[in-house]
Each structure stands twice: as structure tokens, then as C-alpha cells.
Picture 1: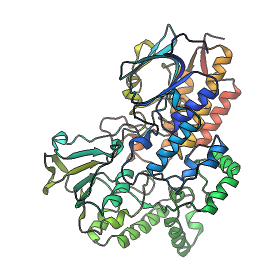
Picture 2 (picture 1 turned 60 degrees about the vertical axis):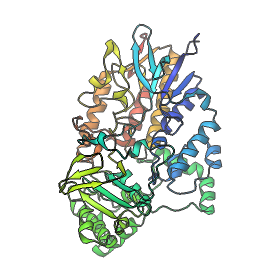
Picture 3 (picture 1 turned 180 degrees about the vertical axis):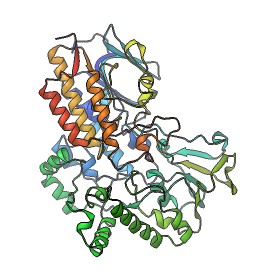
Picture 4 (picture 1 turned 90 degrees about the vertical axis):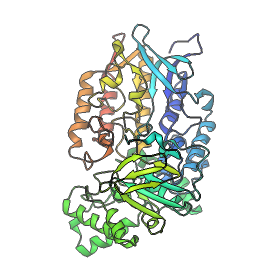
Length: 536
């Protein structure tokens, strides 16, 4: 790229210091671009900076979630647990930032308030909340899919005089919950992680549940010295598997259908699955478990039986068993001691379908059963998934078009990295990005974007904008193939949890194989899917 006279003129501006943004900064610098990363938080981590509530942790194996671009980094960092907790994750990301001297090109406490494309200059003008302004040839918005916490529109939410917290905006200094009366609203992934961790410390804990999920054990464990040694020895094969596998995991797929086994063998296999770590319950299960109704129902009944065994009170156990969806129609959370927490006399469960919240008062939460007073209310109510952050950045493309208007009916993208009308803007890790282990998919996108930028530099192209026909084809594929996937519109992957949000599939329904095949086609055709400026 050209040499810029102003220190505020750069080639690549990266937004977001999560796993994807950190990697994009590294790749951009490595490729010789001038680059700057801006982050609204006071340190790196992205999701793993903001979600620091007690119990927050990976549910993908730590060594499959971290970076693979450096064997030295892989060798020198010893993950302590198969599924690391937030403090260890944050330490790791700070280590990576310092290990590769990335911090000097990062600005923290810097929130983007607008990003406007200047068609004449063919550059983006990006304004920050502290009045700073940057001119960038390219903007890479690595803002993530879980970065805008969602609060339901409950009457009186602002009236509460105690502490009111969202799991996705947890204070850096933590929260003292000892001997406090605590309410948790929501039983998605964050709620079910938080409950068992604080249950023994609080004076009382009331969990408000809209709908239960098919929770199964995470089965976490410390990584032994022998396992650490094996990880180092097998790095190259691990990297090869993670860089090519469909879901981005090391798990061995199962080539059996459920009814290849006898009823007795299936029950034994379900027991193996129940005791297996994390996502193996999806990736190594019977290959038809998500789509064969009878097999799925049998697996659900197996989980339901486990819940009844773990929870002493029959009525509470019944309320913790989903009735509105099959296993895999929503993203299933993985838990440590969640069900057992309800055996404590001071832990109770409120079924919001039977007794909805009518209002929040100064003292607590009011339902049809009356008022319960609290010292702390925790909103574990999820996120405006996929498009939330991008639609709030003040992004304006050609002719001043707002991205939120362009996506008024849901996102339209090419490869989940670009959308027409917004030249030189990329958003790895956003809508239509992943369908498995996020860092693996998002890393694929970052690598592709970097190669696109290098190609443009070599050809002397100042503007990169995808052909609308290619965008239509990719978005049409996402929408069509989503109908054949396991997730339904009950899942937040369709934006269902946010009132008024378009019901459109927000993941990549074609998965990694489709991503790889289209990228290969783009490269083979010398990136002609991107309309160059000036024309070649």
C-alpha cells in the first residue's frame, strides 16, 4: 500500500481484540500492511474479556481453541485444563499479544462510533468514542457474534436498587455474592455455568427459567503431564486435523447409525456419550442422532432419566427437562454440577412459562406468585447474535447506505466475510461464519481475507467489493441448506431471542467443506469474484 503521511492513515484497521481480531492483526502485520487494532475493552480477549462471570469457560478443548500458526507458541503454553476457565483464557490471549509484540498496534478503551466509506478517496473514515479519527484503506470488523448483550424488555428493569448485572458485561473486579440473595434470569450456556459455582456461597439463589435446555456434563479434567507431552509430540498431526476437519475438532466421527446397534448396546453407548467430554456428544455420537426422530427421542429420554436421578425433587426435575425441542435443535450447553445445585434447600427454580415476570421493582422480581426480594439480579439472557455489533457500529457504505438498513431483512454475505455496497469492509467471525469450533472457521476466514488484500496490493487494486451475484448465491445457499440442519427457529442462531429481529439463519449452513470449496474456486479464478477498482 501507499506510504501515508499521517499517523492516523493506515492500511488495515481491525476492530475487536478477540481471538479473531488478534490473529487478523498478526496476519496483516506479517503481510507488510500498516495496521491498527481498536478495542472497546481495556484489554485483549473479546468474548473472553467481557464474559468473566464465575464459571465461564471453554466447551471446546483448550488446545483446539487456541492458535495453531506457531509451533513455538503451542509448545510454550501449557493449558492447565482440557476446558480452560476464563482467567486462564485471558492470560493466554495476553501472552499471545505480548509474545508477538502486537500490543504496540492496539488501542484499548476505544469504541467505534462510526465507519464511513469515502467513495472519492476510496478509504474508510473511522471515528472513536474519544474523538480520535482514522483513515483506513481496509476495515476488518472482527466484532464477534457474542458481543452485544441482550436484555429483555421487562417493566421496571432500571428501578432495581440492588446490583444488576449481565453475564456478558461482568465487572473486572468481580462481584461479592457471599450471603446475598441472588436471582439469575436465564438458563442458557452462561446461566447454567454460573449457577453451580455460586450456589454454595449465596444466602439464596432463585433461577428464573424461560425454557430448559438439554444440558449434559462437560466432563472437564486437568491436563496431565503425559497428555502435555503427547500434545507437543503430535502438534503437526493435531494442526493438520484441526485445519481440515469438518467441525474443527479432534473428535473421531462415528460411522454408525443408531439402529445399527441393539437396544442394549445403544443404552451402553449413551452412557459412554454422557461421560464423554464436551462436543463429542454431537461430533462422535451416532451419525443420525440429530435427524432420526426415534433415535433422538431415545437419547432425550436417556438424558431426562439422568436429570431425574440427579435432582431430588421430582417437580423440579420435571421442569428442568425440555418439552419444546429435541436434542440439537438448540445449541446444547455443557455443565458441571448444574442439576445437583437444585438439591440445595436455598436454591429454587421458577418456571417463567407458568409464572412470568410481571415487573422488576426497587426490591426485587415480581411474578404472578408475588414479589421476591433480592440483593443481586444477574441477567443471563444471551446476546444479539451474529449481526448485533456490526449493526451498531455506524457503518455507512456507498451513497451513505447504513449497514443496518442493508441487512434489514437479515444478513446477506459472501463467505461470511463481505457484503456488496460496502467496499473494503470485511467481518470474519460474524454472520454466516462458523458451524463448529469458531476459532478454526474464523481463522480460515482471516487467512483468506489476508490473501485477498495481498492480491489487491499486487494488482494495484484500491477497492475490493464482491460481485452481487456471488453474494446472492452464498446467501441463498445458507438459507436453503439451513432448512436441512438440526437447528430450528427455536435457536438464537436464527435471532429468535431478540424481538423484532429478522428470522434468518446466522451460521454457515454449508459448513467448512462449502467454505473451503468456494475459497478454492475464488483462488483458482484469480479473485475475480471481487470487482477491482480501478478495472483491470
